[in-house]
Length: 144
Image 1 (cartoon, rainbow, N blue to C red):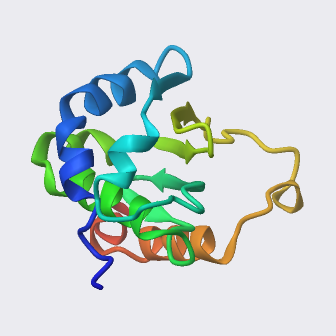
Image 2: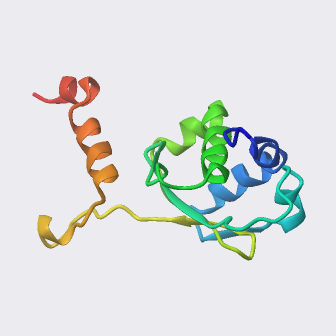
């Protein structure tokens, strides 16, 4: 059975609420209580593992490769919405769903003045995103 896209209808149902909560992360962390039966309606009799977390950094999903199709479908729904896609470009947000079916949104502040570069620990995906941003033509054209 194809897993990809299986949960998209669930995320589209909550799309407007999720977009509002994402914007409210500017001031404080946000939570949305979902329900087990909504996940079971996708065809699974029992949901064994709904837990996931991933980061959105400058409009890109990071640490999502090894996560569930539930998370990937959420990312696709967010990324397919033009206003959300644009808004996320300058943000860093962690999205988490636990076994209690509570979806959480947490703003992750950027480190503006670290003590030293060795104080920053990045995952391989974060390093890749930062490298792509640093090597982008737009950034290069702004340099003197």
